[in-house]
Image (spheres, rainbow, N blue to C red):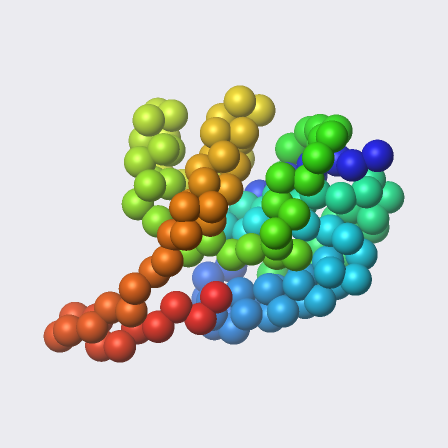
Length: 157
């Protein structure tokens, strides 16, 4: 049985470098998930990770047990799991979506002044996931920013 498992967790900002944490999480997740037929998406903003995973229930339970022990994740809140007939994120072993204004706009429309995914209900989580999925399907790409304020920032994820 395929399920969708979503959770949020907080990150202690002062402990490690954010880019290193994200890089490590994504490298580990992509390798593990590909070997275990797990698919998903990761979004990070304002000190909060949001991750949604899809795959076989037993595989996801084992993975979530490991995630729960990971010191990079604090105050983990797991949303109720949902059975899925098809994998929505089949293209990705683990997709990372960069912080984006469209997501901030969606959260404002939901009555939240900032990225607070732990306050979402099931319908709102689905709206958020649909936006993450559409951003990828539409070929959303981040351009390298150049100029005096953004000196050569590159998107590495």
